[in-house]
Length: 561
Image (cartoon, one colour):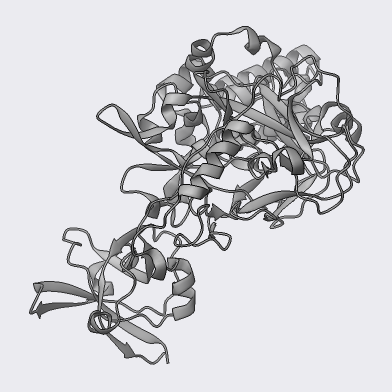
């Protein structure tokens, strides 16, 4: 028989009516560990004028980084193979929680972070505002409301890669959130650029409106398709006294003027009658980019850089978490994977200060490259790049280098700009590459040298590290929740055998009609009078159950279904 629980959620007050769908153990938030920037001096990183590396000849590459088919949109990601609806695309991506992202100024990442509410559990990380940075498809891929073809699976995994905060100095030094799957929303043709919805609100801010102008949404493309279909039938079936091109052009102009309800719709409609047939055939969304927006394999080979060369699993290095591994043999001197980087103001890595001293840094600090005297650090924003670990001078089999390719997605002119000009203008378009420094075997981990300063700092951290007091019995909430398998301790049971102090019971809920519940006014010797909401815990979790509230389990009983 399934279990039924009665909960005390005294902090939940009218007029909010809540449906309790399920409860789990949640971890008291906070990443541990010391933060170290990976420093590269000019002697360690090749200059933009270095000898051009080899472009490796891969088995059929499935994903390419190249110039977007959307004008002035910078980089884009293309599939070189057909992808069926529901299939996964590329590597699973990590999530790096970002604290107070909206409060930052000149914050490049503000263009790329996602609402943490979109990903279950991220809000556990802090009592301050949180955003989710998804280096990889969450940052590389563009949005086109008429052609969006995949979405993030919003159930990331929380996994410490086997590290424990009581015995491992690497615990908390990397994000535990990973496994964001990229899933096709429809069948995707080989050669298509991948697009994901940013949400219409992304484009409604004043600054973006001024910069980008009006952006057609899905409804606009649907309306445009309807106008094209209607015009195509009228102008090709109706018999007229004069079937001249000029007459049909004038008729098309009249249809646009009378039928289109907004400037956004007019933007995506064919400009001339002779484009009507093509727009009717491929749709206004595809027509707005041009049929050549679906690339040939030859174009991808010539203009793209393969993204499909590594896979992710647990690192071979102790304390490192996850790493990137070669899918195939990579010859010395070959490009392993492209590394697009975004400039980040170093001061934006600070979360808290006390008496003028930095007391807390973003976890992001452990993922950036930089020079100790620069105002700017560089954040790699491909999922493959963020998993490449430090091998030191002995184990490193790759190096980081500025790209020497002639691709338009890399903008050499940025090298002549001052740091504040790059930051204030949110300038993107810098591309680096991991280059093999020796032959790399299939399934070998890709490792680079982070530099002597990083190596020294890490060595000293390991030497001086001490576990947090009381952490010996710590257990991850998701692991314990799985082990308990739905059998959670009541308040009285926890008096006899409490959970670890970092854990508490909590409920997820969403607004619901009060009639859904048995509402009981109860009295407790310690808590006094409080309201109990009794709900059926055997129901399926609702996708809109996005809130969480700490609670106590008063009693547990068997129920029949």
